[in-house]
Length: 451
Image 1 (cartoon, rainbow, N blue to C red):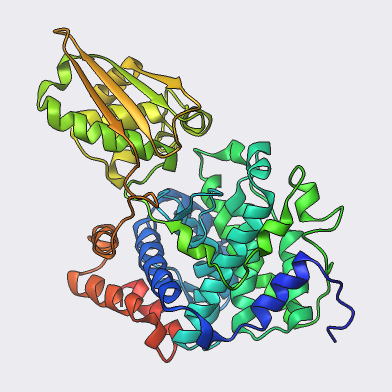
Image 2 (cartoon, rainbow, N blue to C red; image 1 turned 120 degrees about the horizontal axis):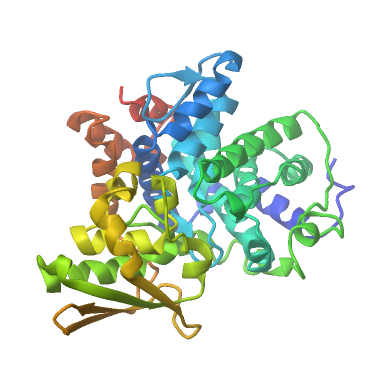
């Protein structure tokens, strides 16, 4: 059945996933998957009451199928395809989920959302679940490495476009697809790939990982039934790489495949906003401590930052919480005033707070290509003529300054507080860390509903 496949990147990735022996998954990768699960689950619970999710659920309510899959953080159960969509939306809508720094992919949303939905319908043991997630994130990030940065620079939201590959790989591994079927699954996912950066700051940004989860899940299920597609979808002249990027370097997608795990380069956010704002937030927290209560004495705030800061988060007059996540001006102002940054600082109410609105115009931003993406230089001039400055070399949450397991636990407990009881939160947290030992990974669904 596999003899007709042509050699190439698509084939190599399909062979890697279909033929992977779960006993060979390195222990550090297993631990990284558990970290990713805790982080993803917390973000999904935290976003489970967001208007973006509620509007999507209401839109599809008349069309929902049998309720065998969970919506994380909620009591409702729906069909697997819609559960994948809804959980992808909720896990990303706070912009608090994990990030692969080299490509800016948010890997977990599409992969966990798809596989958890499948696991509540099709029993998957914990070890297989963890291995499938590792393979899904690996495929997702490696394909992104082969088309970025040009792919992202053109205007594609890479999470939406490559997330379907990751979801298809994870689900395909769990379903035991052979190489031919896995190749078709990648082709089916590729032809559904979408996501535009133009919609950042709106509800549509969170739609991208939701649709990627849904399309990847459907791709694997269709391939299992023999639904055909291109077998060279990544590298072909009219395939994913050449159509959605410029001069793709797809050979990078398979360098040291199975030897070096790029999932280990995945990082976790301490703040619920665009990643490039994080060093500014770190600096503003430090400056707030230096100023104390003198925030009304601020004359001007000057930031010197990497070019991506204004490209991605240059909204100077945000009107909504979602727009605030893409406003370096909002983040600097609100953190200088409050001395902290939580998910609650990116609500409509806080974005429109009078003191925040008054301080935002005093923030100026200078682009400096010599500044690293996780670095920032900050200067505050006070009305009495005094000057405060701060240099952030590496932001909290970067690979050089990662969040610890304890940090991720606290983030999970904070995001689930008020939605779960304390006992439910701790029980769900414990089982996320022990996922590889579960007889049926689908049992996580009930725990993450708060039961």
